[in-house]
Picture: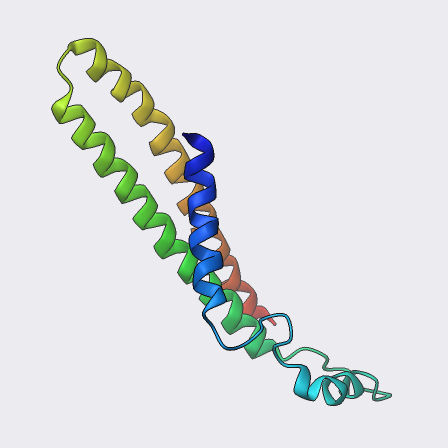
Length: 127
C-alpha cells in the first residue's frame, strides 16, 4: 500500500508533463551562447543581479510557507476527524500521542521558513 502512495503521484506527474508542448530540459537554449559570453567579459564585477536573486528567494520562501501551512492544516484536520470518530479511550490516547510530532514538525518547518524570510529581509537591507 505504501508503494502505491509513492508511485501514484509520480505517474500523475509524468502523465501531466507528457501532454505539454515544450521540453523543460531545453528551456532557454535559444540564447545560451549570448548568456555565456556575457559571463566572459573581462572586468565584469556584477555577475548576478541582486534584485532578481532576492525576488526568487522570497518567492520560494512564500510558496514553501503556503505549502507548509496547508500541509499542517490538512494533517491536523485528518487527526481531528480520527479523534472525533475514535471509539475507545485507547484510540484517542494514541491519536493524542501522534499529535505531538505533528506540532513539533510544524513548528520546526514554519519556524525555519520564518527565519529564512527574516534573514532575507535583514541581508537585503545590509547589502
